[in-house]
Amino acid sequence: MTTAEVVTPGALGLKVGDPVEVRSAEEIRATLDQHGELDGLPFMPEMLALCGRRLTVHKVAHKLCDYIGRTGLRRMDDAVHLTASALRRVVPRRL
Image (tube, rainbow, N blue to C red):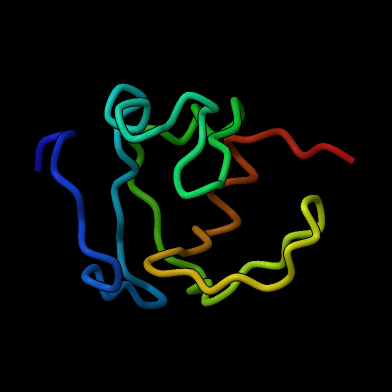
């Protein structure tokens, strides 16, 4: 897949336990808007440590609660939480 290709929502069909490979930083940047977001979700600097890594789907995210803009619940397509143990080794926890 090239960075210009777009995946149809719901097409990935990811489920718990599926292995995934996080795209490279360059591939991810190519999908972000002028605010560094994709579909209103920010790509945060601490996520760079995960680029190019192979991780496992921990949970599937079906909805998101917007506490900042207070827009309420939002349905999500093809959004997942990745294996927490892998994330703890790479991304420092902030309290």
